Length: 292
Image (cartoon, rainbow, N blue to C red; front, side, top):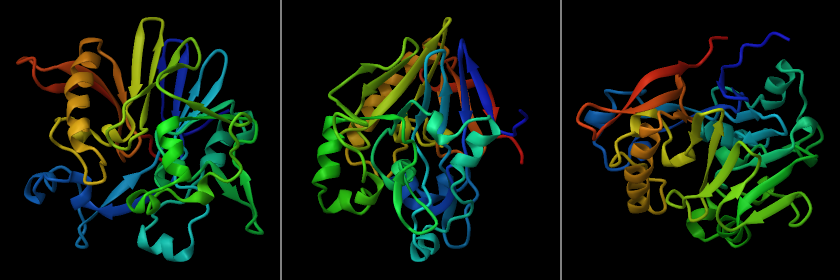
């Protein structure tokens, strides 16, 4: 079946980027302490100071499981929220799956990197009458214990983005698996706890036939955040994010791993290498978003 989805092969694992919706956010918080005179040279910024933010859910087709990493903004935003977040492209994740001959019922595992609405909004959907249902009814959803505790008892900061309607229908021991640390999900796919962006933020590593890819979630929201000090104002623990990038990025560069992106509008993945000075991270090749 033909499709216009961007994809990447990592050994026996095929990765697809799905339509999880696009919004516009103020560019300032997306670059935290970095002055606008610097970050505005790298992205297109509107008169309202906003920049485009994609939310491209990742589909992993492994030999034993179909896995979705992060789920996009979902279809539950109210008109006021649509306006506030300046939704440019609607959430069309089920339609993306259809292009591959799949439905949401075919998904075995869902891995949200964390619970912010732009990553977890597609866990639960509304039907035409406004009734909620689990988008992936057959899937096992995997969250970190620390993240789940905040979801259940959000502080004032977390409550602004951890919306309870995104988790209704998840039941521990049934369709929700709570982990505390790392988990080998399949022989090729591993979850590891990072913290940093949120207390229970998790990342996903894919290794197959000598090839490696990693999805670092909001530790690395775009190619513009490769420098360890380029962090976002939404990070709960920015010093942890800096330390994690200083440790993880050189490690993956030495392994020539593919770095996968969720919020990028153009470059969806890049093969990491160390620069000649062995200090900076560069891409020896990139994967660009498909047109259409």
